[in-house]
Image 1: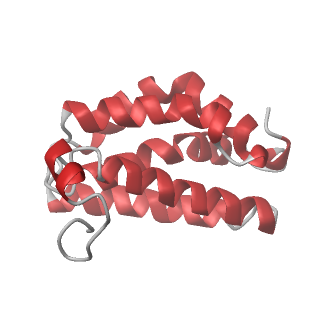
Image 2: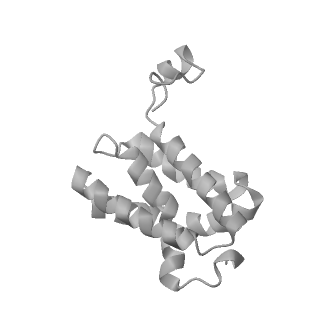
Amino acid sequence: MVSELIDLTAEEKELLFKAPVLVSLLAASGDHEINKKQKADAIKLSHLKTFTAHPALIPYYREVEKNFGVYFEEAAQKYAPFTDEKREELKKEINTLDIVIKKLDKDFAMTLHVSLKGYADHVRRADASFLEGFIFPIPIHGLTEL
């Protein structure tokens, strides 16, 4: 168990463990669908985070990884099709997540927030083409950056 979450309710803990799923879905559904590459990338990243994340977050990501696939499928079904209305519902759930994160130790909360933002950025870029990365290896605002 993640010691930083000990004072949270069971519902708050579950919401935090779903956080990477929720931010992944929001990031990946900008074009109103989730493609297989984005889904696979989100799942792969949940595994990688168990040993590449900030040391304070490794226990958290180990917990996340346990149910990531199940949570991803549940959330994808809940918010599909990814219409503007469904994406707004998803944003509301993520806003609830912000309230829970504010209850955490300040340093842990900041580290988690930065990590989740990076997670979303990675998933958002999952469908960027290989050719784009090859031709434009340096991000160019407005062209290769969102």
